[in-house]
Length: 188
Image (tube, rainbow, N blue to C red; front, side, top):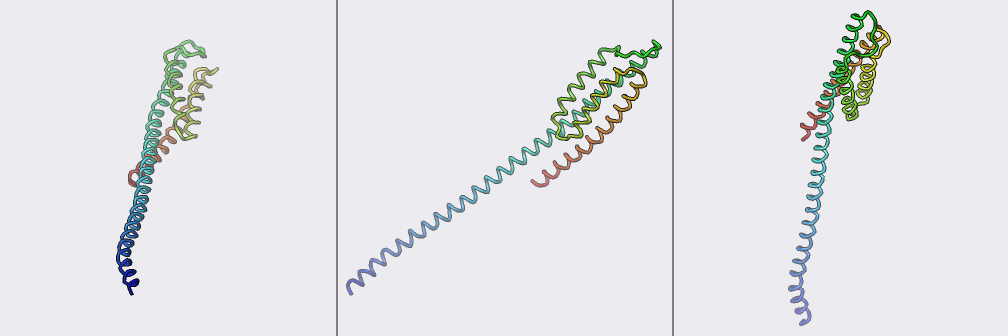
């Protein structure tokens, strides 16, 4: 019986220590798993926040670029219109169509605006807008090089029609960008 009492005494001593160690290990494992889950959630939250910030910046950049592009294309149309009207007036005064623009300042304004339009159009993510800007620039530049007053007038009308289509498309894209921004704000 001595061995049984000694075994019981040893068991009574080891059992609480073993239980303590198992409890400690279980708690440490539980804490580690919880920490991993929390870390993963925080990491995912930071990723999502970065994604949202990038999307916000991209959307705002597109919106600002498109608004600036509208102003620049207006300058292109205004310069081409002024050059066309000056060319028509000069031709009426001379009683003969003047093929080259007489006002270099208007030509330079138009050239500078067309160049700025090219830069801005390459930043816009809408292919229709890019194509319309390209068409407007080509027609605006060709107005003053027309062989006849009628040809110049046809190109002028074509430019104004393209300008209207451009502004309509720009309006649609701007509304879509505004909707995106609203959705992003409500999602946060």
